[in-house]
Amino acid sequence: MSPEGVHYWLANVPQDQWSKECPDFLTDISERDRQIVGTLDKDFCRLTWPEVKQAVAQNQLDRFVRVPSDLRKYLEYNAKLKKQYGSINGFILGKRLKWTDLKPQDAAPFSDSAAGDIKILYNDWPYGIDERIVHLVVWTKFDLNDDGQTDELSPQMRDRIDNYVSRTFRQKVPAEDVIWFKNWKSLKSIQSVEHFHVMLYNPSPEFVDQITQGDVPLSKLVVSQENVIE
Image (tube, rainbow, N blue to C red; front, side, top):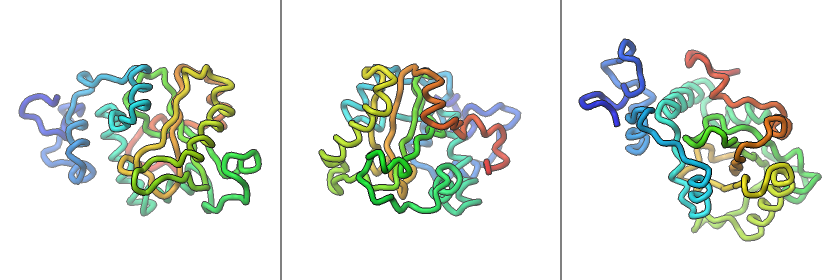
């Protein structure tokens, strides 16, 4: 919780940097985000691996939240992205994925010939989970078919994703240390590019480096919030 009488936007900010007014990037946020930003990092509890697995198994994806100070940085950085690129989607597509379009190859999803339609990167701003857990995002040019009413993946697509996860991750990481999920539409920060999440518990750094082709999450690259990573 924030110290009594202290505005939520001042939590986790050194007192000599306190501002009288709320920063623009924190004014129009959800009540949920406001409560998280206003929580002191020392009072935040990261989810353990068993808790992460339970959240996925029970479809309680709203349990995944960022460490308060990380959420603040995430919201500030996203505000700068929108200003510079017009949208977060534009930045992700052009700068992170380096794709010029989202037209998939004429191939079955997740087939060997569709490799160019898939890219595995770090989650740039990971959730508040055990720091031994590596959080990756699998981006695809093809649709991950789901039911518009229930937000659930079709059984066929769920099987295809699970088979892909087995081939790509479970051959290198013990099956019990691999989980995947697709966020509900209401929780997705990137709506226009299809993706799902993979979490690995304490994997080999060499394997992660290989599977992401040496990717580094933006949260580690952004030393100063003054500029957007080009």
